[in-house]
Length: 196
Image (cartoon, rainbow, N blue to C red):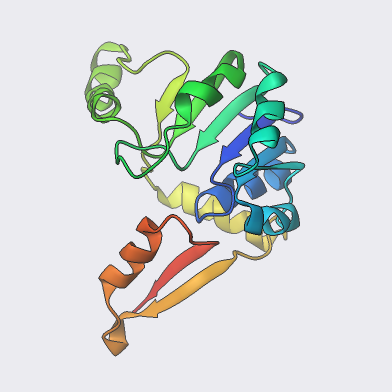
């Protein structure tokens, strides 16, 4: 797992999942997090605690990042997916992973989804993981213990505030789909909250 002093790269650092990648790495695990985001979100990602920020719209900044070679213990990719509208960062960013590092994605290709779901069966039954080496498609399997641990970070002031992009009130007939459309725009900064 992640430990103090590790180097973490968060792709999509200003989005709802990316902000937690940055804040948990920096504030809970005392790792050094580098965030990748667009020009307009660089200051925001710095404000949530990133040790460094790379503007993906700057070709020179992306080349500079790549020139440094294998520098990250964990790469957390919240952007790449099988959807053709999303960029696929894995081929270029995986080259920045240190030996025995871990590339963690929240979305992936159909083959990765298949491997991930199959591993839910093969690992407990046969201790056999069919996922690609050094790659993990992250599926949240939230437990009470996990939520209590997360709450404890807020109680202890290790984490303080979650940036909110928008609140959609479902009691006022605001559309659930409007939240998903906002999420799919890939331009949301912070979390989308559905209020009932």
